[in-house]
Image (cartoon, rainbow, N blue to C red; front, side, top):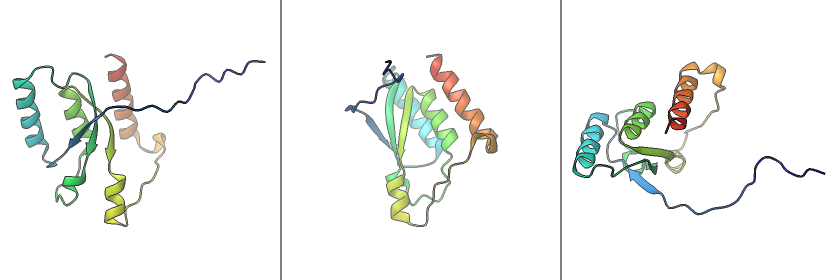
Length: 121
């Protein structure tokens, strides 16, 4: 009898950097990341990060997540997750809704591009 499932689940412990955003101003973030990488080339060489949104919870500008993720990737960072659910709970009245890929062509295109880009690295 073949008991092989094709995958195995194991717990692990990972050391991750938390990138705590202090602004949602993408031009300012671009400038700051460019300065950091100019001073220390390779600083973020494919470094996995968790994006922490705690300090921007009261920001008036919208979070442009797709542009933020692209900006981080351009500077060598690999965003893994965002600490947003805690903030959503604190704010109250925030809901998360799954939207099927076929009903969100733009998000589907972004996801496919990200997966293609990741496979090329």
